[in-house]
View 1 (tube, rainbow, N blue to C red):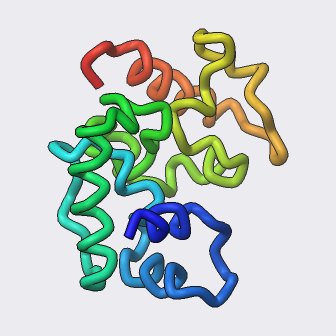
View 2: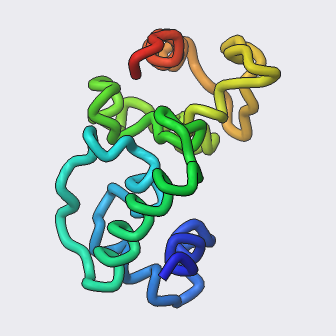
View 3: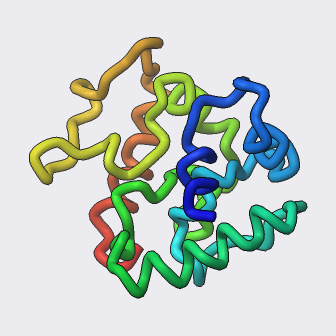
Length: 144
């Protein structure tokens, strides 16, 4: 069943069973969902029995074998109830376009990357700077 967790992180569109599970989840991809701390996860809109089993197994094994930390560097910025602005993902579309969607994307050498140094396949605007400040505030809060 843990192979399913790995399959969920593969690129979308390979016509695999995991693609169906991504579609059932809607915008909250399972590959992002499992990295949100369990206490902050919203109820998924729809899943499959196989995915439910994989998530349950991940929850147990990730704690028992210290496979992750809380918060995890893999924690998504968007659709994370600990980050209220991120619950409106369209406001962060340029960040998604640049695949800046997880907390580790904003760190280098254990320091927050300055806005001007963020990797940008598509340019970020001055409007995005405000969103950056919101993300930075989240990352600087030790309890997130």
